[in-house]
Image (tube, rainbow, N blue to C red; front, side):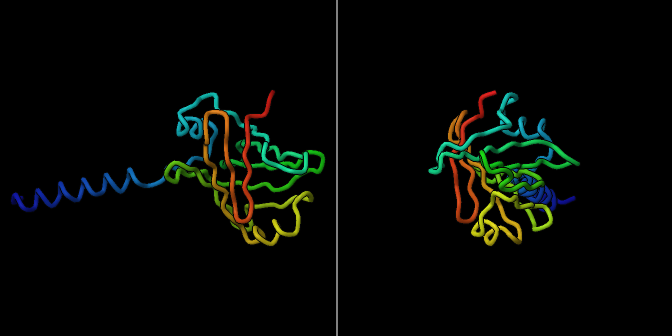
Length: 149
């Protein structure tokens, strides 16, 4: 190999390494999620603090059939929405996207949420601090704290 070819190979490998590092890490298990978060005791149940109706959403994260599930339950009303998929890193945030077959709307979801997410959607999870999380999707966002056990 010529020096020029060696430089090209090294440049290509370096570029491939940068691309691999930039690719978002997607996880489908609780162990992987906790590893990506760097917190082996990260809460898996969060309670909304930003609601204005006195009925906080409770978000639970659990594993089912090789995927992570986000379940949103509206206090005193029941299931709001539930979706399964992979949680992927997106900069300082995490995202989970659902197509219409992965997202189930519950009886507690209103017509606006059903129309916005009827064909699927994406939820962005942003850790504001060790014990505060913002979850957002089209037309809605909420602030959450770990649910007391």
